Image (cartoon, rainbow, N blue to C red; front, side, top):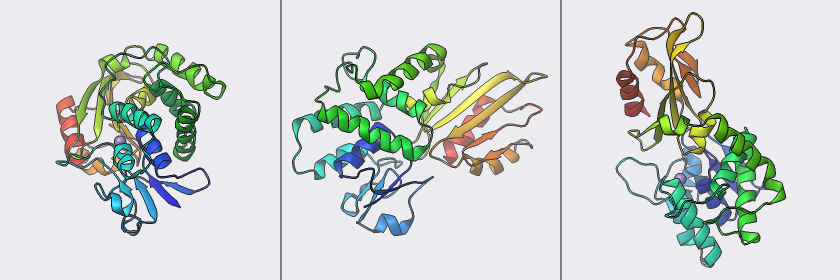
Length: 278
Ligand SMILES: [Mn+2]
């Protein structure tokens, strides 16, 4: 089977698992949507990369403005004839996290979400993240771990837990300082003002598709700077919109920044452009 995906998260990885994809398949990370030929081909599994609602064509997406589809894994679960209780429970947990709703009772560290995000911080290549993500979720099912409880000590996950714990300490407070928005196309945007480097991984792990970081005094001599980054959207497309307001914006597909000399744009101006065009 051929599989396209944009971003490895619990929802996309569980969808792949439910649709019986495995590491031996041809798994292809894409930016933006999968090619139309793939979306039209029911033998190709497309996970959160277009074709929302088209489950009969093997397309599982739920990021469409104005439409109200459940998370990808819940769409896949509906097609699964066995619907075994542990799988249903896992999908329920993943669905909650994916929609940024939290389980009613807070889960002591490490939750499954914390283990998964530790993996995302450890494995930086999207394909590796996707395969490891499927492994984590497969282990949860095979070892009968309850996703609504703290995860037990499981040897293959120790490094993930350690990295996550360290990251939580390092970026303590960054999530508390982040303001979340939904973009025009339904993506989650996190905006944070910070004078530190890093922290993007934390925001991605918290469910952000796009991150805007504002450094009020960046570099020498200190100057205000915006960085806009995404693992799923091509942010370089925003450049012409910024060029109209201020010259010197630049970057590459996954990350762009304001001019080195400093920016004169307000947060509102920056936010408006990103929210409208992504
Ligand atoms: Mn999702």
